[in-house]
Image (cartoon, rainbow, N blue to C red):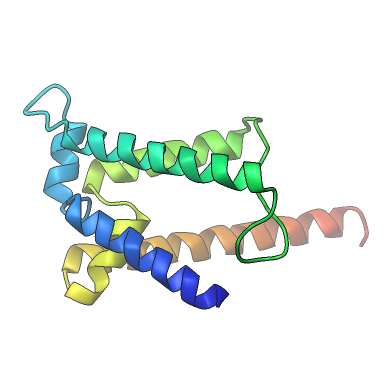
Amino acid sequence: MLALSAFAAGLLFGLGLIVSQMVNPAKVLAFLDVTGSWDPSLAFVMVGATAASAIGYAVANSRGIPVLGDRLEIPNRRDFDARLIGGAALFGIGWGLVGLCPGPAVVMLPFGLWQGSAFVVAMLAGMGLFAALRSAKAGSSSREVGV
């Protein structure tokens, strides 16, 4: 049942991205172009998504237990560190350069659009590079302490 509900939520999210045109890089770039021909329509998408999310969090908090699953897991960390700031900056730069982020790029895959495929390949390469660097760093620090 959990897999079915995850699939349904992902399908609904993907359809929302298509309807709101978040899969159209030109639409996203027009939203980000605040000094040119700015298109504010995606701001309304973000406000709607924030409202829906707030309602979901409020319902989940009031119930105390999830509908599906054993326990409610809502992140409570509020700290900022270099990894969070660097990741957010990298995300923003990438979004501004190509007008895509991971969700819309994955939604584009079944349509065979080269932009989505190129983005997903680059994203996976970046994730692989991060994992390799993290593993190499962990290996070097464990050798330094004699482990």
